[in-house]
Amino acid sequence: MGRPCAGCSGRSHWCSVSRRRPFTVTVAVTLLALSACGGDDGPDATAGAPARPTAGDGATAEPTPEGPEALSWGPTQAEWEQARKIVAAYTPEERAGQVIVASYPGPEPPVDLVRELHLGGVIVMGDNVRSPEQLAGALGELHASTADRLVPLVAAVDQEGGRVSRVHGPATEFPSLMTLGAARDPALAAEVAEASGRELRSLGLGMVFAPVADVTSGPDDPTIGSRSASSDPELVAEITRAGLDGYAEAGIVPVAKHFPGHGSVPADSHETLPVQEATVEELLRRDLVPFRAAVEAGAPAVMVAHLDVRAVDSGVPSSLSPEVVGLLREDLGFDGLVVTDALDMGAVTDAYGPGEAAVRAVAAGADVALMPADARAAHAALVAAVGAGDLPAERLAEAATRVVALQLHQAASAPPADSDVLGSHADLSYAASLAGLTVVAGPCEGRLVGDAVQVVGGSAADRSRFADAATAAGLEVGTGDVVRLLAGTAPGAGDVVVALDTPYGLGGSTAGTAAIALYGRTPEAFRALLDVFTGKATGGGALPVEVGGVERTGC
Image 1 (tube, one colour):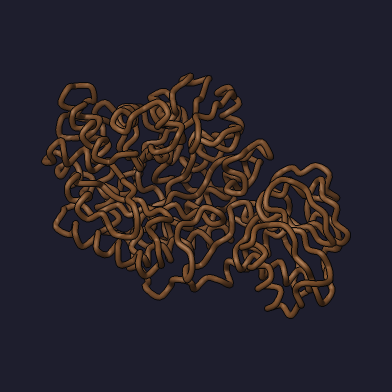
Image 2 (cartoon, rainbow, N blue to C red):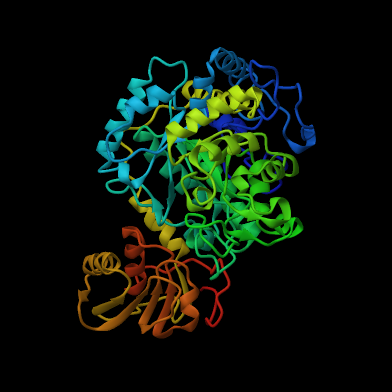
């Protein structure tokens, strides 16, 4: 597996890239060369293109060691030309559909909607999943229903690990990104991403909205929290690059998110439009560091958040702002696929209808309108806007061509999915949780509890999973040492205090024996915790964020 390594420059952060399979050689740079607009038949690789990075920046297309010359974003020249020809022959209705990745209600696959609107793809949410087997069947039906199309369907999912995971048992539950930030092991982070990607591909999924490249600002970050690797931009950048590498090895397309950084705003864009008060210079020093690293590493796609970036385009959601997308394209030099965050979120729907939001997003430079509140309204509005001249036909064709080229390339290059891989990575999830587990007070090794424990705090599900792990570890549950589980940022008291999400509550907590940051609630995280409790293992993590009032940052 390719790993980040010292001494690399430009896009050569993955020094073993030249030794990969054909798909993984290119998918790690899957969508980085289609920002130029050509004539009415779609984008052109040179005409009207913005200035490209020099060869020294690593952006010049190079031949892969196996197969024809590839563009800097992955597809071969032949695949790119094929995509242009396909989109040139599309009707406006087909082009509009190609740039929409829609959600759908319930477990039944939206076969009729996909065919009616010529949808580019669907996103799987929790409501669509009854079991992995059911999901695999639904996606199989969708893929079969579009088998007569020249372009395969995008099947995408939010599966970050930790608390944002749509597919659960028997699929492996992987730890949060903050766990991996605490472990400070890029090779481990890449291995986790690869394992997760392989399991997703076994279900028929081809795109994952991960890794999270946001830099969390600390306790005042209500949305990202443990979804971020750290408050240190360089550490986030390192873990982001590793995640991109791992997903690429699995043959799944990663989408780094949420540009220009959701971790430093004090509101949740699901509910309202958060205001980003930082200057561009401050953003470049903090929030944009991981995104720049992702671009330099060849990220195939980036998701743009819904933020009011006052220093760039005040009052306009960044996902609908040509200026903010321009910051990504021009300042960071990103030529890949731009995906909006979900367009059914409050930050957008409070001010824009589904049709207007889709048109504004594509006009601003987005290539995928993700989860419009009403897919039919969004589709109709895109077609009407092109017909009225409000949305240039070339812009819609450019967006559609990026999606088509990606799907053609993935279909031609992805390694076969492994149908037996689902749920096979429990030991890796355990190892990652143990590597990130951080003891900030108390003994670093040896037994922390007696033969019996009583658990308080957390949710009923937290306490149930803890009890299962404790019983499996040979402990009696219900009496004995008090284990306090912290579900949020509020402090607590107990013989052992364990923060299950972000670690900020540990600073004000009273722990008789030990205080521990676990950063997660997966079964394997609790197994790691109990092994530390009983002295069978030691936690290897160090705090990836600043927590005042603790004895130390780790052992």
